[in-house]
Length: 418
Image (cartoon, rainbow, N blue to C red; front, side):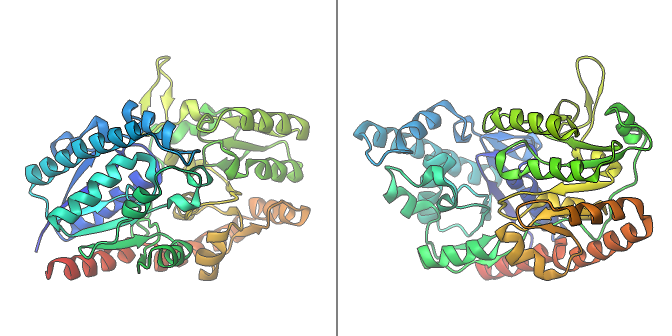
């Protein structure tokens, strides 16, 4: 029986993991004719099916005012409590209106009951679920205890109550085994691991005319090797190891292209990388000004490409992150049949590595032997084809939409009886 599904988060816009994975879940749910609606503070979903409440965005001024006073200190002023209560009460009212307007049957909170970027929204949603007993499937991408910035705080009772809440009408979904164990240990809550997924049953389309000139537009020659680092410039992405790799390849045709910008955590890291690339003689290009969420033209009339346009043209992908909740860029590279260098971050070691992918792995740093192997793959098209085809089939088995489809059907049945 078709249901109306209400997705809830502070933001459904852009390329962050929550926005991307929620769209995939909605796609899977639509196969069973469930219709999805979206509640958030920022949204790039269709206005016809969206309910946008600016106060629900984590960057909203009142929420930022609260955040400035509850993190990094264990003492809370009474006035701060009043402001938290006032905003959460207001947001609870908007949740009632959202559910009423779209006749929602099931809610799917996306990370807003896991990481307290917007504490009042988490409180509002907890109380709303408790008052209405509406069925919910909470999708948790990362928890507050995984981030040091939340470790000293003045709101322990709210974190206990709402991040996540313990409710009989709610099922919990996490994206890795570590999160599953920690949730059980800290809250006594059982959860299901549903990894991030890709539509491996439908391979990507071939390069179209719009994206046919990506290499030349980024200043790459025909004979250059396009080595793609498909991430933002933040320290946990370990981009210095990508620079080291290109330096060890000792081939001026190898160009390191970073797709996204710096700034989320300051610009010092980018400055360090630029200095390192200069010292190592590596041609590194940050092309964020030519990459956007949608294809368009900038004010100079130049094409803006999507990250997927870049994947089509890349010869090799580097992903030397020191920590990831899962690792969407790894699945993307495999989806586009690209060989990958990956650092063995903890979630990869536990959840992904045992599946049997053929990846070039490092333990924190690049060695000459790894560089030699990369060079071999870059120059041997038959070997490269064997590796990427093998990886695609493994991913199709473990990380395709069918994984989500089966689990969501079971959850909906257990919550609604249908």
